[in-house]
Amino acid sequence: MSRLIPLLCIAIALAACAGVANPYFDAAKPHRAAAGFRNVYPHPEKGSFWRWKWEQWRAGLPARPAEGYRFETAPADTAWLRANRREPSVTWIGHASVLFQLGGVNVIADPQFSERASPFSFIGPRRVVAAAPPLAELPHIDAVVISHDHYDHLDIASVTALASQPGGSPRFFAGLGTKAWFARIGITDVVEMDWWERTEYKGLDIHFVPVQHWSKRTLTDTNSRLWGGWVLRHPSFSVYFSGDAGYSRDFADAGERYGGFDLAAIAIGGYAPRWFMQLMHIDPAEAVRAHRDLRARRSLGIHWGTFDDLTDESLYEPPRVLAAEAKKAGLADGEFFVLKHGETRRFAPR
Image 1 (cartoon, rainbow, N blue to C red):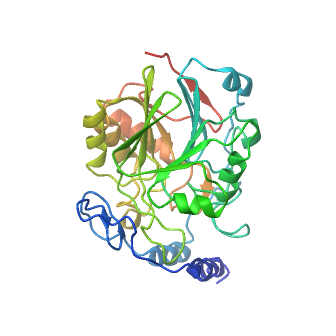
Image 2: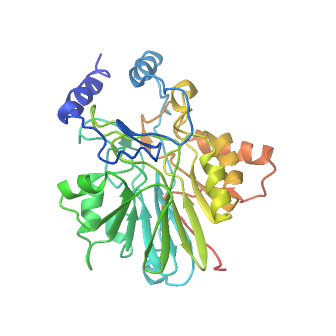
Image 3: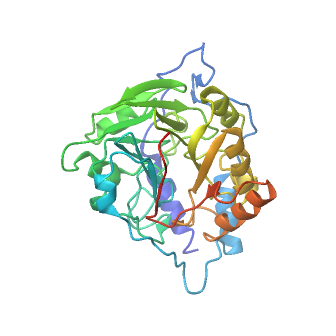
């Protein structure tokens, strides 16, 4: 029963906001429906969250190592990150938080530096390894891209800290419907975008692209903010960021439209149980398919190994399964790789 009490607290507290009709409704755009946003490609309804949590509780999942999770964190080369203006690079901070450097611009995706991925400080999925590098040691961030509004991807404490960084706030980019959320917490330098929309910032082309997922922060705001992936393009390097996504034709659409990417950051964790997660979270085998659909030269596995109780699989499992699936698919060594928390990978510019 003690494990059920936090779930009941979340259910009660999340009911605070009243639902409204979609102000972005556009009959000419099927994804902008009257009752909220929807995915491009039809799919079955996702399974019941509460059934999953009940089955998880009954089975005693997720099974954790007796000694607890122990992840090795790479010593971040913060001096190099702050000085770098030429080499494209990617740093995995943890979960879906990624620092991209391209064209001398520092972009962070889905910053989550808090102890929990939750609306509460005392319950909800808890971090098992510290964000690396910590927020205070990051280089000055020029732009922040947010894939969607779930608590493990859009964190109030993290975005407010970035907005007050020395040297001025970054510009925030997010899907339709998210600008008002930012305004309520005092952040106003926000650009909200529709799918396939493009904008330019500091020499980067920034594109918001469809993925199969959903949005929700309370019990009554389901699909009221548009979710998606991000494409960052510079003459020297191009990046795709998946955020959360179920497997769909959306990956191939992006690969065809943009002609491939130098690097794709693709989710590989959060996939069990499949009856519940499959529609909205790819597994490692599907991540390998997405890598090929996107025509990515290399891909980085993200969305794993950071927060406990977001999924049923062990936090150690996704990289092991990814390695097996990449080998089965005939990918070259290092073509689809993972990093330690805080580790940076550098690339030669085109």
